[in-house]
Length: 496
Image 1: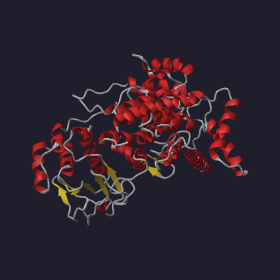
Image 2 (image 1 turned 60 degrees about the vertical axis):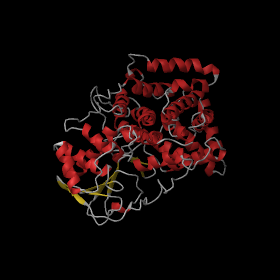
Image 3 (image 1 turned 120 degrees about the horizontal axis):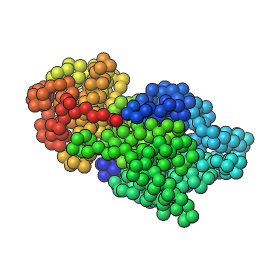
Image 4 (image 1 turned 30 degrees about the vertical axis):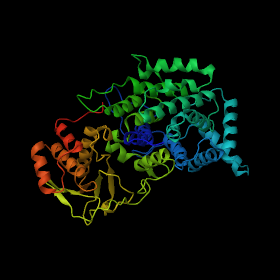
């Protein structure tokens, strides 16, 4: 299925924002959540005593699924389900510090049977999930729903196939039909959001068995009624209540007025709403994050969150974007090898950097730039894992700016420009020398250089003139360049 640039961005946001929600919720899991008006912080801790920004079991299990989906596999096939089950077990074998009781029981029993010589990880795991359901009256936990978001990316063009995949993967650890239902509904909501279509989980009711549609309609209506307080959906270990909590955090958080601030700030604010609900905070925020990322895209995730998130098995935010991008591309890289290539070859000749007119610690360059002393890079074009222009830099922040005059290519242009400029400011505040580059320094790099000047308090028009003076390659026209005119030093948006 061929996706537009904006659809690719929304797909890339699904796993990334799942992880962001997870890491935001970790410090408050079954503890005191942030109060009204307070913001969640990625300060680590939680049940697993995790470092700041590290995701927990929610995203780790989602990654185990995504690693299979990113190969282009049919997630309903026996081979794919075995691979996913084996991924769950690899994670379990690492003794994760935070794992749900039900999931731990099912994976532990499965591991013991496989070690005793049985074969077929998915089949054994399903049997143990069914056994757990027989032995425990409450087996419709939220552990399948929390990891399901990425499943939606594997079958964007076939909702029925997606429903089968979502239920089949849920049943590996959660045999109760309600757990599978929740995954079907949430995946359909994410599928529609990535494609830019309305509907939400209500749109998936027809994918459920007839007898369970009416109860689910009532539960969904309850979560989306006007005046609903998301905090009602607590405790939220039950899959139905977890879905209601996540959905209510998304639907009750106001979408900003575009005349005043970027609409995509809804992503940040709804995640804070999700964490404020309390109880199983990392799981509810991770679930909400999957839908929010599908709605607003990776470009709506602020750089500090993109930079901070990391977790099993040694991945970061960039890797989650890569997994999502490979999944929607059927496991195929693009014509230049992205996202797996070490360096995207733009054919740009090597060139010298020029210092920013107002800050000599900020260097302006291109994808062909070499021989610089920057120890941090802000990339404004698609780059490889070890792009040539990175040089000896130890930190890279990738910002999604598309060199296009089509308005649909940069749906959150004002936000991304300011966020990229804020990344430069933040890295400089840490004492780093920063290289800002795009492909040829015609459009994006000079635009962010001007935005950075505005953040420093300089006059917009004077900054434009001074950037053009030092960076002769500047193309002083186009949507991105013109977008800087909307920014002022006072325009600092709050995630509240």
